[in-house]
Length: 148
Image (cartoon, rainbow, N blue to C red; front, side, top):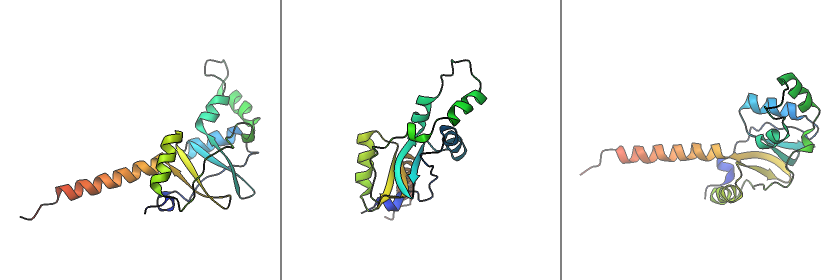
């Protein structure tokens, strides 16, 4: 059985609930991620998504510049907008089970937690990489010359 541990990413950037939306936005841009786990005292306490940040951002139709947006974002702690009722995965859970949870719940990621501590993240991107690997293997297998 393939488990969550076999596919998850263990090098995960995290923030604290007291960090600002501005810091989260910068991290997401720099690291090219759409989800940031929120950790406090080594315990997973929530998740911040790109959607959450967009929801608290001032509309682009408003007449403010990026410096003003940064100032506004700096005043909002992550704890004000993060998701706290987050479905998490156990690292020993079946990968198939985790994929079904992500599909059923329309989540782009599953934080992986062991004893309340974040140990990794499983994302849609991980499944795309797995699909590419499997398709390449299948393609390679189908293009090998067959012995008669």
